[in-house]
Image (cartoon, rainbow over all chains, first blue to last red):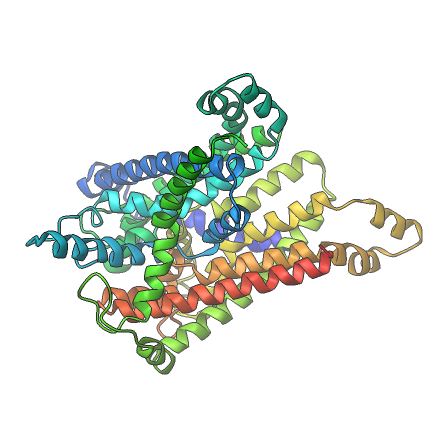
Length: 264
Length: 265
């Protein structure tokens, strides 16, 4: 099968070389001590903690926002809600860094929100200052990855029996109770599959973090870029990449498991 | 309908509009506004101008539009051929092999794009395969990253295809090649078009792997936007982002219409 051979040469062979290179220093001599040094280094641990924090927080945000939006789109529809759902869907195809760039104009130190607040209350300094922190990255990722939750949720909601909801409501159940007891059980598989996909994508996210360009917010992909391109430290880059790939593949396995159960 | 009272529905819709406006509408609107902004020191720009677009059209940025289009087109075309081929031949395999190989074809989409770029740098920086510094390595990076999506789309289409047509063709004596070309591929066409459109869009917005491997002289749109904004030229960056967004949307909408016409829905 030529496609498999092509992928083996262009993807799996380079992947194997990354792992090999993690054990060799930049002159090609075996050096496993470097791995221990990198794993205990401050920059690596810092990036690992940042990556996991951002990923978990962004996924939680996506799940909440996605669930709220999907509930309204599916069960309290308004004229044009179908179009809005399609519009949010196109965000999947747009480059992720677009949102960061927009946030600079909206929430940056000279952005619209800060200028507005400074003019209205004649403040000396910009009052809103979350963009260049972990939370700026998290908010940007929530915007970018919510569509990935919304899509399976809307599909799951379209299968919920409307008669059941109407019966519950005629019998006097309040909307929150219907959501909890009728709708949410149907949404759980979609939430798990969408959530694990979000974890994977946010761990791998590069553009958003690069564009925010905050000194304190370094994640694993950004660290790999910095070490390889800016410092030419290929062994260090390969060590970090190996760990990042292992983390991503673990999350990918989780996603396949969840998606497989969803399909069954 | 979950909420029956009119006032309750209105409150919920206002709430929806707020989330949608802040998270999705505001970013797009503000990029559009800033790409047209003359000077922007207060809440709103002091004036509007198309200067950033004319600057972009004249400058080196135009080359990056070309680079992105050519890269996207070639990488997507290659991914389409390879993905369709893989999906078609996997259909003939046994269930276990099919699942294993199917999984392998999806793995590139799970690996961080920066690592894909790093792997290509490590693998192809020495003879006999010296590709570092060539345009080909950018195409390869994009191909690897989008191949899983093409494969996934085509496989999904194949799974929905009724085997009846092919069986009828084959019982009427059509040879495999004739059957593939005149029966299977035409039936599959809407999925092929959708797969091509999505992978083209993904390639146009790809940053992580490109930034690792791009040679001077082949700067794609996202890389170009990053270097503009990094230099502080955020208005030109916004104009170039709008061009990227417009190109992506036109591409997707156009392909959607072709697909709709082909399927007659």
